[in-house]
Length: 363
Image 1 (cartoon, rainbow, N blue to C red):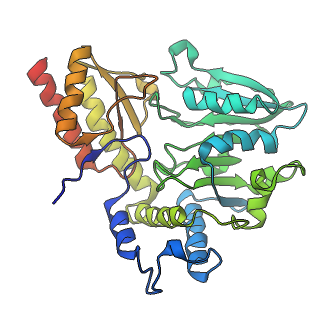
Image 2: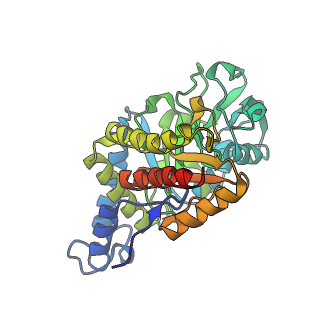
């Protein structure tokens, strides 16, 4: 039997084995219909049940109040970088962004193509290894169309542990890499978006959770596929949605519910991350975490070895022992362990053990 690797890829990322097994069992014949879910119409009752159930599971897990819609789009979070200013950044208003790293920067660069943008706070002074303090975020509420944050920077490994609140300024968040990893007060947000391929399922679908009030004044001239109203009015069925990706998201949401919901996952994710952070912090400088402790991510743990040659040797040893995805992003280098919801506790324990053993042998 082929060994299943310890998967620490940053995305596409690990999926729960139970979900993969169910998808495998239903691949050719979905619930006795004699066909795969990929082969049937998105207007069929079988698919619409999956679609609507997934939306309802999001509402349940996030405890969404009335007045929110769950949408399924395509194009990844990168398309949302453009859609947000296209839909909400009107003349005379400003798009306000907290600059926390590479993904926040991509959102800012797209917004500048459509209107005036303001950096409301920046972590540049700390090389983006610390999230700006909430108290440092400066927004002019008279001019602000919205305030945008990236809740978790996948590349740097930094994460917001609390969220800003500005009276009368809609809060928008890219939660691609930490959505549904912990309980949040979703009512703080006017819009949340996330590519699925880290915590929700495979790539191909982007989830957008929005407050209906925010779409009141969307410009009428926008292309249909780049207008949020198109998706709210047609229940994300204006065109053929990414059927199989949404089916997989549905299975993952059920898995989350079965594992204690967001509170259960937060406990599990905290315990997983602690194993690796403890191996770093208790190493006496052999390993160094790259993010300041007050901004550390539970999803993406970035660190380095004190010696470059030893770092390469550790990666070689890890690869030989079936650990994959531990190379840091090319723009940052060093090491990164992505410990998303579906990464098992055992994988994190194995990585921590590997790190401790490697230090003993090479310290």
